[in-house]
Length: 353
Image (tube, rainbow, N blue to C red; front, side):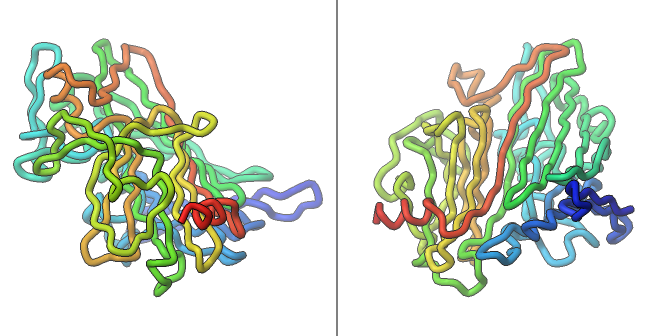
């Protein structure tokens, strides 16, 4: 089911297509002017599992996913762009108290819960199309509809709508959280994307730079925050850029700086003289950074609205970023991934080293 959109002269600029893969439908977006493309699997967490953006005039795969993910999806937090909702990362002991009631969660990471209910659910597609400048697809997840077995494990029902728009050298990811219930909705949101760096397979790790706008980090014990926040030491200070080479990270950063209302992370490949920018709005106050073992050319940059286990920290009067949404209200969050060539990003990082 293809769709096309062109400019006034009739030249095709953006397109979308729905294709069958492994018994499911994959929604493919394409920008003809830049060669950028994006593929989303709604039936398994609305996962953006294949993203190609232009680097030096050539579309490059910038997101890692397991081979054959669309045909046989598994391990939902290890491929593409997993969506973490209504809580990102771990909840200690898979239990918490809210409003005077105790809740028990599935132990996806025994003895803890991890990453919420949406990342492996079958989402509903609610819109898709293309116009002169972009192609898009929109999906909807509701606990009571798409994960009804989890409804009793959370204080309120919740709706999460996603809209992914591909245009030029970037893709805009926008999510709207709605509270359709008569109770206050506590929630946290995050994503868990795996980015390639260097951009060319086999590229030099020492010729890469990672910049993060974080001045503090949460102290963790067994991957859970103690409640203490410290200033970043030199080895965890990425504000002026550090190479991917030799990094071993699984940290929750905070104290984020925002440029013009945006938190900005940059992955820079000095050999290619190009960068990938991860830009997120002020709704995101924490940043998880993870380097998977044995994969030196991959790094996870994960914007979160809260720290790990924020719902339990709240019972100790520790502000971990837990959000409370009143009945009938909604909030919108936005992240943008975008590549640039011969960019000021690379020049800025070179000047700082």
